Length: 443
Ligand code: GDP
Image (cartoon, rainbow, N blue to C red; front, side, top):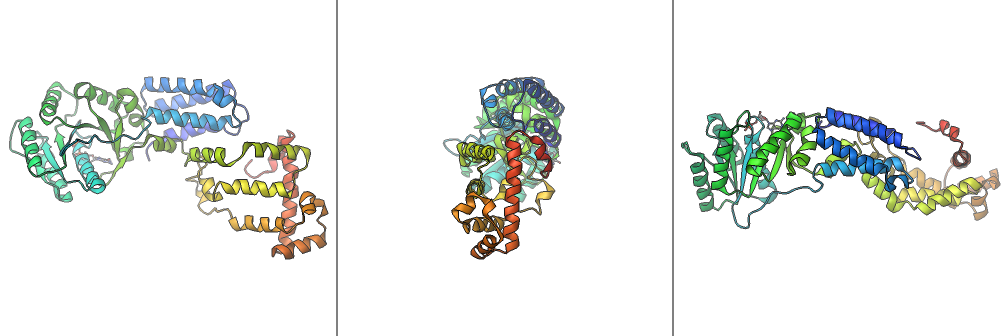
């Protein structure tokens, strides 16, 4: 999977921050240092890393974190925001011509997957827009490239224009004329690549550009080349003013340096990523989702937003106050259950937590919503006085509650015992005795 190592390291660096009531400057420095190393090892461009870390530090030391109830989580949100920005923020789209055909010129070094990607993009346009594309074989130096494109055309039942001709500009002009005649709505031009950028290649591409007047010049970059890929992109962009990038072979790239550097280095968006050799393996590029993926947060942002929206901070403070004063009763207990339930099915919520989405232990894990309903039924069968004072719950009252709620007496007893225990423990915690936490599972 892409970004595996980076993901793991950044998550580790951030893990030390979560759960802390206060985050010190030293904590932030330590985490920043780790993240910086992780990015450099992922082969992200040095300058991009430097700017990124500077922004993270500035924001982490600022008001939004220091004034927050959950500073660790705020920092994760900042890292997520900045990673998203680094990759371009909004998902980018292909330019569309006001009249047909929309012309897409594909450029890139040899072996990056350019010809395959021409086919993938044609398929994508056919699938999503019912497009009728024409492909032009403009890589005339490698006869194999023309055959390869023809095979792809056969596979997709798409016409491929080629000519036995030395002048690529003429081939492109003739191909475009045919597309206009046949009213194709897209033309995808495959162009020559070289193993390295050279002057002859650039001149040829400039000539093709002049003839084709493309709406899109899409640069194909191999993700496995890391930040070198970003440098190549910069060079192509200077000469041709590319409109966007397709990053291929992301399926084999465990580092992610190219994906993270290209936007920041060139200012040009990543449009799609190639995720395999098959023509269907092309995916739209969404910076926000990619950032979440890197941070291994199933979707912690949604969770934080949900919590901010659904979980009333005043309510939480009221509960804490009741804990301290030892007046937390069954009514408050039900309120708490309802607050948590408002956020949605509990196992879904668990999956939004960092590292939980792929946690094998969660596979067989589901929180029993029924159990919550039973607990509520038991509390609702208590009188108001009993809800406020659990000590009133003598055996005869418990039997009445069991009958009223339709639950076995053992379950009523267990619930009351658990309530008392949690109340005791919560009281210790709110009064600052964190040793009480030692008894909790996972602590
Ligand atoms: P070109 O020289 O740039 O036209 O490159 P090709 O289209 O011939 O592709 C070179 C090799 O990369 C071929 O073996 C492709 O199957 C492979 N390839 C292209 N895109 C991807 C991708 O997204 N993932 C993987 N794993 N392989 C790819």
